[in-house]
Image 1 (cartoon, rainbow, N blue to C red):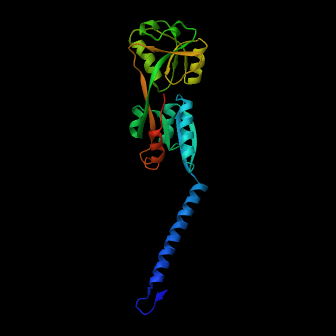
Image 2 (tube, rainbow, N blue to C red):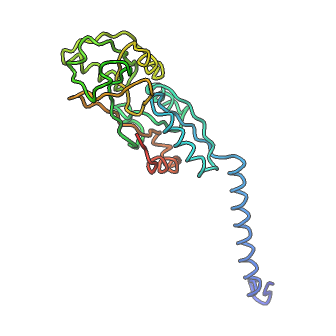
Length: 240
């Protein structure tokens, strides 16, 4: 398949075609090897989730992503906002779903949804029969205050700055404990609107507009590597 009458020796027409076919076979083999390697050792995504986000929404997001991206292995942990930022800074996580506040400026970020806060009351409370209350109505009411960096505290502090005196009867960083205490009639609290539970009624507070912006954070160095997940999360239908 070589034309030896020339100098240097060159392939004949048949030889050139064989060479081209050989290159195609080699490229296909390399592509198959790369695919098999990906399947054998899937890309790992270490993902952090804010504790107070909806378990239903987070599980649907991750489940939907895994259904369509089987080549990506996911490890998930949940924590408080400040803990997630620290873990991301120390490269213990690749991306986090959390509140976007002043700490987000040093990371690549994507806004995903905005979530309002509402007043949560026990279903037996007199406010449970009303669609809304005024800040003045909350004078002297027992309150469960959330600790940590979140808008929970901002809402409670807003009452204080308006001269509304509330009784803080419990402080906790646990959202499930907050809901349980409300349901038990221990006190009222401001919670994200998605946290619906049968024993707790959500009531609007007139002239108080509190919300949190939630989204993805990742290191700027990893942004391109995580583009597949970022685009999926941006296109996901967030129902909050």
